[in-house]
Amino acid sequence: MTEGLLFVFAEPGEVPEAEFHDWYDHEHAPARLRVPGIRTGHRYRALDGAVPAWLAWYELDTDALRSPAYEVARRRSPREQDVVRRLATLDRRVYSQVDDTGTVVPAAPVVVCVALSTDDEPGLDAWYREEHVPLLHRLPGWYRTRRYRLAEGDGPALLAFHELSDVGLFGTPEYREATSTPARSAVMASVTRRERRVFGHHRTVTPD
Image (cartoon, rainbow, N blue to C red; front, side, top):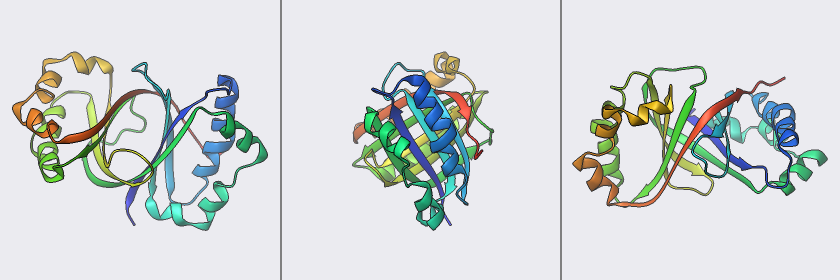
């Protein structure tokens, strides 16, 4: 059993927002939460003004995604087929966890998702473990940092998934220190692809 993350960006496109939320909250997400091994699901709205504007993420055992129950959940109803056809983006990624630091919170107000590909994975890993994560976790309200490797989907190979209390932390001296060291500059010189997104909590989904 491996700790995993099902991570889905969505942009409604031609789907009216009310219809988009009704489909996601009452059909799409509940079907996934009924699968044994998919433990929690949350929806977040972009705070950074970028698109896709919506993120859904599910904590799970990766074996759950190979189960018959999940195959049933993925069968699209006629309504879902119609909604998905009209979406501008439905970007599904699956990650396997490699590291976990901090405090578990039920649904953090803010998440920061930093996806990276690099020519120097050992150097990036050492920087995260030895400098970057310890510095970030000095900030009151920086709850948790989990790091993942991409298992399925199209995206950078690695993901740092941060859970925090407020975007105001980005303006603190401690945050500036954590993101502007000489070691960070050296590591970033080897990065070949980078995505950084900031989202705020919209709702926690349930199986009903």
